[in-house]
Image (cartoon, rainbow, N blue to C red; front, side, top):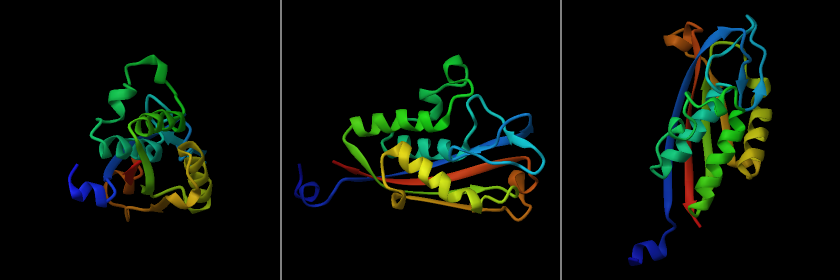
Amino acid sequence: MSAMTDTFPQLRIGNGYDIHRLVPGRALILGGVNVLHPDGLGLDGHSDADVLCHAITDALLGALSLGDIGKYFPPEDPRWKDANSLLLLEKVLELVLGLGWKIVNIDAVIIAERPKLKPHIDQMRNNLAKSLGVTVDFIGVKATTNEKLGPEGREEGISSHAVVLLQQN
């Protein structure tokens, strides 16, 4: 080891993104919370299509150059049909911890015109913290609109971006 790695903690940053189409007949699950959409829409996907969990999962994997969510939970695998994305996140966390890393913090944003997500943010943060084995102050979740621009603005879908910081144990 060099003097630099002996002195400074080893840190890794990961970036994640996910988007799913809004469709009738599906639940709208975000951060493990079933949110009611005013038009009865939900997110289409092989699992529960929780874009917040998927973005965080990809950020964790990306921080350690481990690929993406599709590598571990491919949509053609029937085991992951309608899977709870918090459970998928927990499986990826086991991998991260097993490689000797821990979460320093997570910051995420959900982009959706509707429904209003502010009333659900605390529950999302609590669900994520519980699944990731950290206190809620390690998890930042925000929601914004896209000012009627793009697929989120036209209410065709909902997306999420996430950044994670990991530290080697």
